Image 1 (cartoon, rainbow, N blue to C red):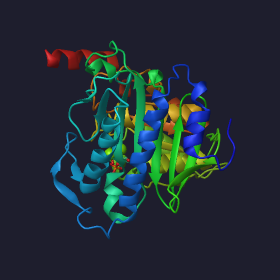
Image 2 (cartoon, protein in one colour):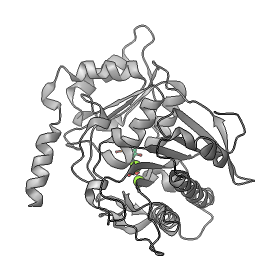
Image 3 (cartoon, rainbow, N blue to C red):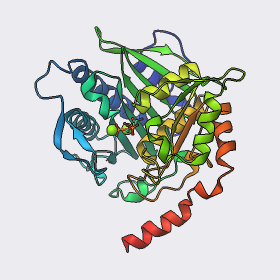
Length: 354
Ligand SMILES: O=P(O)(O)OC[C@H]1O[C@](O)(COP(=O)(O)O)[C@@H](O)[C@@H]1O
Ligand SMILES: [Mg+2]
Ligand SMILES: [Mg+2]
């Protein structure tokens, strides 16, 4: 049930029954994410004014990427909000090499959920006042309740997610999420610090005329993607399409969901498996995309059916308006050798771990 000007807090409570495991734990978890989002939003908005929040930390994260001070701030803020409230039994983050088990201080009943998070998405835009975001994915643990979490609780396929969402810190700050009953968007009223339902039942147009890809990597792209770009740029029918690329997955995705479009970060000679991370970027965005009537694949198969084998695993990402994703898949199918064999990859990873 959605009505305008409903607050996010009210919406979470009013829709708790939609969720078959509803004991209030997921609601408390979503409320903790809401709180952390407001803290990060306040910092992002003061970017440039606040001492010591711009620039690099001077270290690389586990991805080998320069860590931004805002990456660290956002990471600490979400981890603190989630662990202090004991609303999760474990957290995995882009900024942490290993998952973080959460112990219950009061030996009280610990939550049955784990969260995987990209605390600041679009970090390369953090210092230049361009929209950045946060992405989160929530699973019910698979190991017995009350026992310490293990890697198995995190390495679950996307089709097992119980909820997923993202935040865009842009002209306005929005939180968009799903629990498997459609997608709803909430806009923050900064004067009151309250999120209001501004975009009920968001849907992806079946078609669009926007493509989002870093064409600077063209030489590295698989042939199927090169063919698709030629198709997009050809003057025929409703083409050429328009190229739009902000460099923050959340904002390119958000625009494409509102207007119709496709986002592509393919594999390539520079990124063997693509750049984006399966567990805390592609799976949550794929869940939202599908819940809004769009499609998300690796160019060949459904993202949410991929069996993960590593916490920071990367996959090629094709996501957006269904007919546009079908079109590029048609072209990728001409080059079956570019398809990634995840079973083989998992075996390789398992053997290396031995
Ligand atoms: O600069 P590139 O190679 O085009 O990559 C941009 C992509 O990488 C990302 O910044 C990766 O996310 P992080 O900033 O969280 O590492 C995406 O948001 C974005 O779409
Ligand atoms: Mg990211
Ligand atoms: Mg990030």
